[in-house]
Length: 277
Image (cartoon, rainbow, N blue to C red; front, side, top):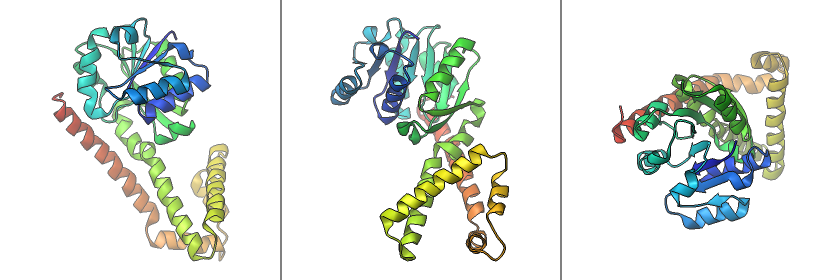
């Protein structure tokens, strides 16, 4: 990879800049970033990471292999219109814009492009994102590998069909918030049963890490792992009975379905707003 240009300088863009440099994927002198008008933020990224920040479009796009679209989705039309004359067939367009389809990106650009559309989550900031990637038919095998390597700098990456990205958004895109919600509940319960909040937090976090590692490393399904630690008449059974009585599992299923449905609604609304159908 010779050069990557990132359009947008928010937290997701910064997560990728950090991941790319930490993994040595691209030389820092070949990483360029721009944003709409926040020069203070642009200067911070350039100085903190030793990369290049610029508003000069010719400078940004000369010899660029990868263009990452990381602005706010509502700003996609204006941003793509501004850069469209610099886009070429040889570039890989990488989008992390929620709700903006690959077809929409091509229509806004007014040309066919090799596009990889991804749905990372906020854990990218600590290199632990669960990212799903969809690509169009114009993405070459070498570009496919570039996309995989790029998203693996911020965590796990898996390829899916674009039609599955709304489901991914509901599951892993919004997933960190569900886990934070669970942690909130566990912390509140810990206080009620007499534990100090800071000690409880340490225990809860390690419990979640341990359980996740068990699921990751074991060939057993989660249901079996749960049953193996649920002794008849024991403490775990008493707790699980309360979860079942309150329909917690079904609540999580409904939660993820609702988020996936909302993702599709937002995408449709955005297409309408951008006047792309």
